[in-house]
Length: 196
Image (tube, rainbow, N blue to C red; front, top):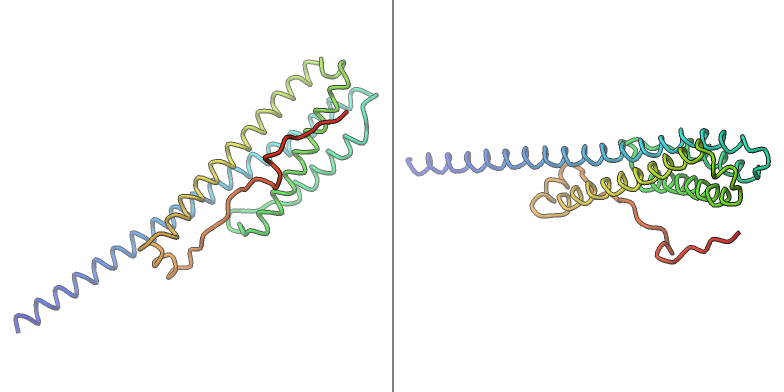
């Protein structure tokens, strides 16, 4: 009779420990998932800064009447496309993630084309307003780079938890799945040739 009592305590203790493990592991996964969402919001914030900033650049450049209108039109169109595609942390799927990344990359290309084209216009390049905007634009691009890096770090931390044992068991029970981070575009390792 005493043995049954001890075995009941042992089984109860094991169940309590298992429950504590499940609770702690689940909470850890939730915390890491929320960190991924937070970092994604930082990426979105940086993207929004870029989108909000582009009209200022366009207005300064428009002040120079001789400037090429096609470059400004392409930049405005790229901005509109980038503004139309936003993804919240709850909707973070690979397809939506790739759509937004493509739209933002298109905006970055259009912005860089504007900056390269400006090199042909020394009177614009020399204005204090444009210099200030160019510095802010460079800072915005740096912020995007840092936000993407921080997002990838949080994705890596989350994915390593979701994929490692014994956390993998708890992640499978509660539907936590690995996520995708930012990857470089094909050919990003090659030099870019700029032609005038």
